[in-house]
Length: 239
Image (cartoon, rainbow, N blue to C red):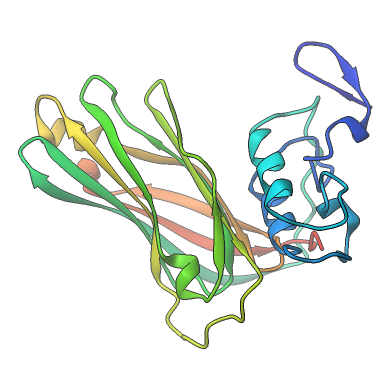
């Protein structure tokens, strides 16, 4: 049984979108389903969220519609078996289009093992207004289709995430660097002050086996460039 924030207690079968059973719905649940996408006999039946016999877009949408929900106390994450010391950089570069418009490019380097991501882009709503959010090409570069979570904006926070769908043959490309997303803003007032209000927070990354990749996000002066130096944390596989 799980207890919601409201105090209501429910059984685990009432929230099948918590696919990995850790009492929260996050990018790892989406990666779990995405890894079994298209299968009529998935390796783990939990990936068939709606129990219709096939892992498909409806299962992804179900998980996505409950994204961010927490049921009682989140279960403890699995303990890492070992750490590779590998590193991924996530860069937030600012492109100035005009005096009143800028585009933010969130770009990842060396992401050959990336299968899903989710992060928050913080900004000052009095200085910036979101015009458009565009999905990046990072998964297409690896030869995968992707499921893009509908971006959500609230109280100066933009939530962005996507997961690879393993239905195509992976690309033989060695350089997997690519854009995670692009965000275009209208700027009100001073451009430098507006850029200085932007931060990447709560970065969640998953590798091709659905394992967590730990992120240490750093921002340069003036927030014209933000770098997340990411060390792979090889945790127990979800699959």
